Length: 229
Ligand SMILES: Nc1ncnc2c1ncn2[C@@H]1O[C@H](COP(=O)(O)OP(=O)(O)O)[C@@H](O)[C@H]1O
Ligand SMILES: [Mg+2]
Image (cartoon, rainbow, N blue to C red; front, side):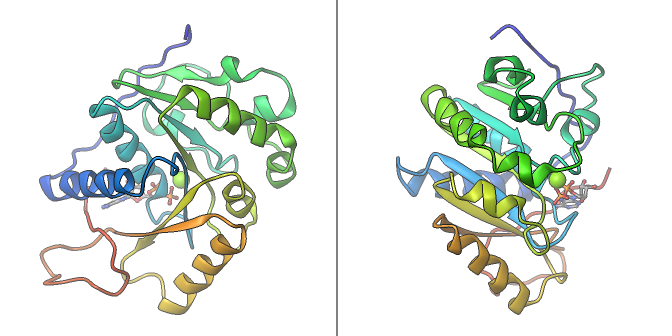
């Protein structure tokens, strides 16, 4: 791959957070060979999907597996600005519009075995674009090149994008911010995912205050907290 980007992670993760991400990685590995393409979503914005997608990609890359992180949150793309890429990059929307081929939107990163497809420019109709057969074709293409494909999406509670993406994925992870999401809403999101035919892998409980929490069991997820920006 010719295109390269340098991503600079501005934040420090703590030991607990790193361990939680590694546990998540291990659990994904144990789901088997047929779970290769994974969609990450949440009920609401800012629960930490993009953060977890990025950290998980890094940890998968660390064990020698080839992984590509795809930003399908075209409405709120975060990676290029958060990780201070420092130059304009093309992305998924350019591919879906037909402006560029798949190879034109894949970038190699400075993290071992981790490639990325950025969201691209904001378009007025992200859901319609994702409905294009081009998305499925892209995923098929990536399946041949990578061990894992992680797809970051907008929240599923009031946008259809994540469900559209999930149709082509083998498994889904629901990121849940502690104390923000009710059991009922989390169940509704899970149902929406399962209706697409995608396997529900589980929930990640995020932003848990580990000092306060003695145990955490409501969603049976993982937990982690990182120091703020
Ligand atoms: N475990 C965590 N602890 C503390 N802050 C977090 C954690 N995970 C994410 N954040 C912060 O929350 C904000 C939203 O995270 P982000 O990954 O962009 O959410 P989403 O992709 O779900 O909208 C960011 O400012 C991020 O740094
Ligand atoms: Mg995000």
